[in-house]
View 1 (cartoon, rainbow, N blue to C red):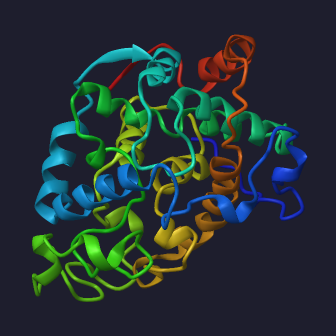
View 2: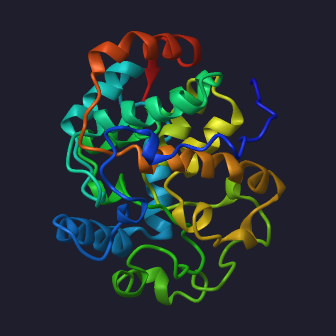
Amino acid sequence: MRVINLGPDPSLTYRPDLNKTETKEKDDYRNFESGSLFDRVFNTYKLMHTNQTLEFVKQKNSEWTSCKHAEMKMMDAIMSLDQLVDESDPDVDFPNSFHAFQTAEGIRQVHPDKDWFQLVGLIHDVGKIMALWDEPQWAVVGDTFPVGCKFQNSIVFRHNTFLENPNEKNPTCNTEYGIYEPNCGLDNILMSWGHDEYLYRVMKANKCLIPEEGLYMIRFHSFYPWHSHGDYMHLCNDKDLKMLPWVQEFNKFDLYTKTTDLPDVDELKPYYQSLIDKYCPGVLRW
């Protein structure tokens, strides 16, 4: 597997003001306190935080990571997200397929030499296809967090949505380390089940050629308590800390490219199909 050793150049950062269609200020993103979509978002997280237990996550890992649910090409999977509006997202109310191309184009603008990074921007949310196969959105979308240890305060809606989660009062699961060892590494942590882990497993099962940095972006881009708030560092090993700046660099594009000005997908498809053919070609097992 090809690995990119150079870390992100801090001078190459996507700035919303460079996007002529940007209408939102940075502070307006991820507003979990108010807004027209608040009720939908809160209800999704309430269900997630009630039902995402250690036992549930183990069950979903067993159910989905065998990648025996379907066979399809990557572009077909991306375009299937035309049918999906993410119920956990307070920023957008349009199909997820547009966000895929927005993210990829933002990365392409700043990192034209890293085609694998652009592809990660395109495919990072494709694991949400589970919602089109009857998985409830609370088990597919939204921010992720470890299960089997204490739920940290930086988790969205932390203080009023976990009350009915059995792990909240389980003495095995509600301590700082829970079932884990110090600095055991995120690879050994069970995360709340969702599209991040699922797509990561699809990439591994199909032996896709995306570098390790890109796989970390896919697997942990929704892990906001870690990459944006600095929590759960006591579970990280050296590899996780090395990869963290890459996940943080990706997050700038994932978040700040969301606008209501939608890209011309048909015009962009040929370029991105060439990246798919390079890194994850043909029919994939899902």
